[in-house]
Length: 234
Image (cartoon, rainbow, N blue to C red; front, side, top):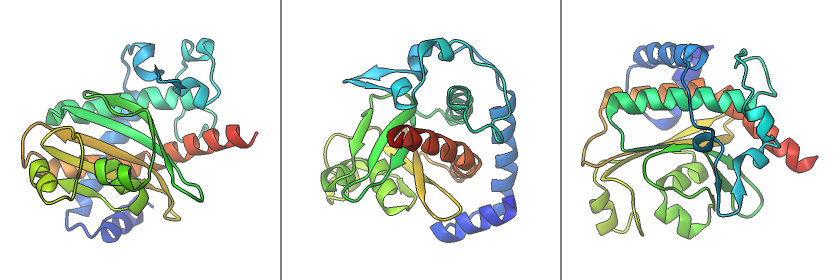
């Protein structure tokens, strides 16, 4: 199944990188997700910002957040608190390796008008907690563009993109990468976003690791998506 996932992802995105290297990177990501242990300040994971509470988004109370128990990430559906904790550790592992200045994971929810992005995890520069993916936001935020189009976007020179109008507004970093997380049916579930302070800083090795992360966390983001939408419908 992993082989087919990797092949489909690379073909859909038109990426000519080694599928075998992506699969190897996926094993490393899965290992971190399942085994990593570290203390994380609850305010880092479960932030409240501009009237938005991530815990409320998933219907979780503070008591649950302080009683996280290890569990099987890939078989337990109602597992938002522990899932986010382990994903943060996995994201931080890759970002630390490549010295990313900023990383973020957004959950995407579409509707008949404009989709909404909700920041699940982040480190580094300040990024919006939630945005509506209208035309202005798509032009300013690379992750909003990826969420609405489904395409991976890599910017090696942000100033150049600003100069020709491909990006507008205040930007984070000099190099940016936005990687879509998609379901087997092609639904956009979210976006991984990362930046560097230097031009041309994203190597093929880093690209492979972030793609591996996007593929591995697909079922986890699907569970979070289901938990969020079930709360809205309920």
